[in-house]
Amino acid sequence: MPLNLADIETLFRQHGGSQYSGEPVTQMEHALQTALLAEQAGADDELVTAALLHDLGHLLAAHNGTAPETPTLHGIDDLHQYIALPFLRGVFSERVLNAVRWHVDAKRYLCATRPDYLASLSADSQRSLGLQGGVFSADQASTFISQAGAEEAVALRLWDDLAKTGGLPTPTLQHYLQRAERCLL
Image (cartoon, rainbow, N blue to C red; front, top):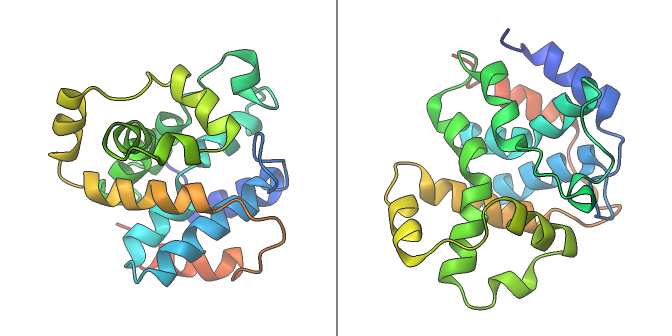
């Protein structure tokens, strides 16, 4: 069943205070910081919304009681990039969905194409990389980046990597939900 904005707000209010696995921020702080970075880069409403919602699958897994505290420490790829898609389909455009879907593959792409990128990842992101299929081969990287929307997923991934600063002031969830409302289908 698709989520509406009130449902999304409820998920953030109920589960956004949980620690973002292995990082010094909560799920809510991470989402708001990622959206802020997108906004500061001049992204439009759809890409800012994708930035806000890129890890919504973690909140859905927490809501359903199916996620351990830090999945990667248990050798689990929680497939969070896919969990939210059925709940967002029909609510947001394919552009938003693709950025959410491909932000993990964007990490694999960046590891394959930027020599220093892997070393810049947090310990948890490095652990999850192996569980998510590892670094792309040259052919996989080429195939990935040729997809419509892949470059936006790469931008989202870079904001995602930077959105882990404890205590960073951001606009409110309501601010970003208002942007999300403007791009509802």
